[in-house]
Length: 162
Image (cartoon, rainbow, N blue to C red):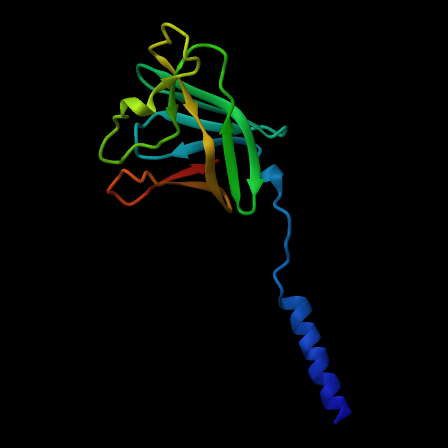
């Protein structure tokens, strides 16, 4: 009977030790570098560059205008969080993709300037604001779900890839 109990106890200990999910820290070197945004919105060449010092740069170049951003990134659990740092220069500011699928138009209350006192922002260069923008980390992709509460559609998904 003692041998049977010892066997059961060792089985339980083995099960507890080897079946628990290990909390392995995420390898941040997998984030560093250039990521391309694969989305069906405006078909612009959008890229995000993540630097080793936990800063990022966003660039988008279209036919008549370009957009940019820069700021800091951080990892929280299984997500990458981006926050922009406003430039001192005068630009119109747009939030990072908070529009509805059915319309590419942004409402006036979503458009503002980097500096409220500046007179005439550039008309062909815009600052894109990432405000606690969350990207789910999945193997070789970063996935951002757009959830605009004013949209009737299912949230749009933006995927970043290498």
